[in-house]
Length: 315
Ligand SMILES: C[C@H](OP(=O)(O)O)C(=O)O
Image (cartoon, rainbow, N blue to C red; front, side, top):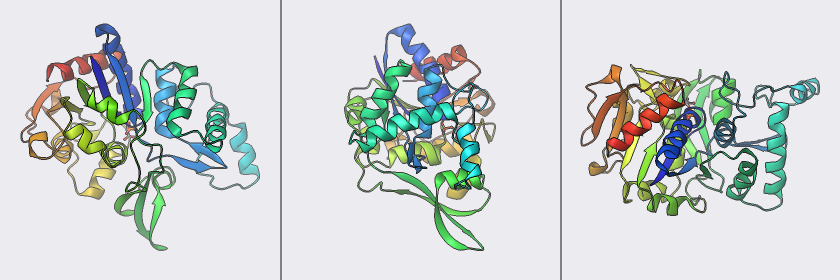
């Protein structure tokens, strides 16, 4: 069995722990197609927050409290940069994490594509799933915001980390999406998958940028594999993160039904055959989609693997 997972970073990484556990049980292969819309260059370094969250989490090196970055991290470089007054000060890079960005940036500057760099970095962490960036090309999520400085587009990280989404926001744009190509292996993985899972990641700023890569959405929607999504919203609130604020920008209700309808039923031009919601959201209706309510808190690997089993059984 081959499983493809469309994923962001924090929720995506937790979900992938369960997918990997399930896959080990049944002897399945897993490919994660990961969002790159959060990526940015900072202090000459290429930072890929979602790829790194997934890589560190599956490799046993993530900080379980923060959900991002390395466990046992130190912050000497951050303090030194602050002493120089180096901007931006709102984005902190840990010392251990910086080693990852140094290796990545050196390889990118040497001409290797992000997918090859990701494979090289993952050879240290042995995540047990194949990690693919959605694209090797530049695709950056920007928020079109407005305040007393007027209307302007800011990088997603500035919106999320600096402003904590607390700024009038008109829309999100995926800069570079028109010309981006799926990274090598992405379309083949989707075409040969037995199941495509949409992780309980942020639908607006984690999954949507993956689907914005030309050809990727159609590969999933028109592909042979059933598509099952997992709701990131339980009882009307995101389990973690700020999906509520992101959905509000789109005018979409923050509920399991709202996100399910945003993805849409495959039979009517959307993506989903199945939609897993939490028990609290039993009774959720998404037209032309099989909805099932199961325990949806990713408290540990076993609980998350049970969610994956439920997703498989839905197909
Ligand atoms: C928790 C969630 O994680 P993702 O998998 O989208 O990075 C989010 O940040 O909204």
